[in-house]
Amino acid sequence: MLTIAKAQFKSFPGAGEVANQPFVMGSETFLGPFKSSVEVNDAPGLIAIFNADSMQLLNLYQTVSVRASAVLEIGAAPENTTVAFAVHYTEGMAAHSRSRLASTILAELSI
Image 1 (cartoon, rainbow, N blue to C red):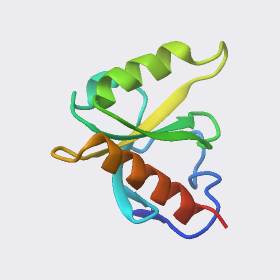
Image 2 (cartoon, one colour; image 1 turned 90 degrees about the vertical axis):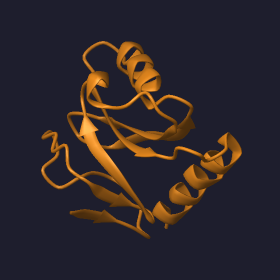
Image 3 (cartoon, rainbow, N blue to C red; image 1 turned 30 degrees about the horizontal axis):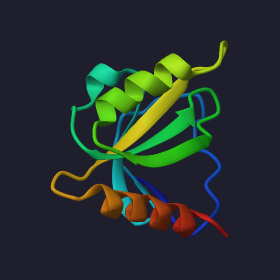
């Protein structure tokens, strides 16, 4: 399991490869990274968006549907850019709590 914590997040080891395995970002376990929205549930959670070629973190935010957000992110990617994403499901958690969790994770990843 890959652990990313208390350091500036730059990339996964083996950039360019999509592993589809659990990893820790900040203090939370994420699943992925994935390249297709059909691989994730239509459930609330956090979604981390990466450049699939370099695996650099582009964005991390809360959503009521990680699948719908993945569809939007894949469709909105600039030409010649492929996005990958990882998810952390948060069923039963309110949107403001998910937002706070995303902010906490981003703060944990900052130097």
